[in-house]
Length: 110
Image (cartoon, rainbow, N blue to C red; front, side, top):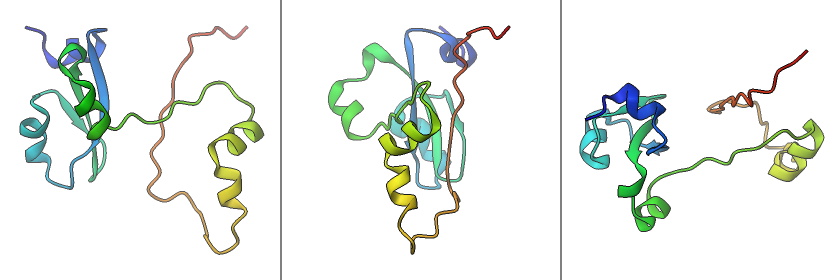
């Protein structure tokens, strides 16, 4: 049996960002796993064996965030809809409550 650290690195397990409603004690029961990390008062990352996650559950309750690749800044802002939202004068967007991730491509810089 793999421990949590092994599951995090395993290709057999998938990582999901889930909303747990500020009740962390329910995460192990709801997602049937002891391997999870709380990342905010609202979201957690759960590690589930990919073969055991059926497509109905994956599409209904597990959140897979969008992943954007190596795009120019202006192109990314347009494609994601951020530029359009920023152009709305009354929205006052300042980035509070924003989660982000960094993916290292492994490309060497010389």
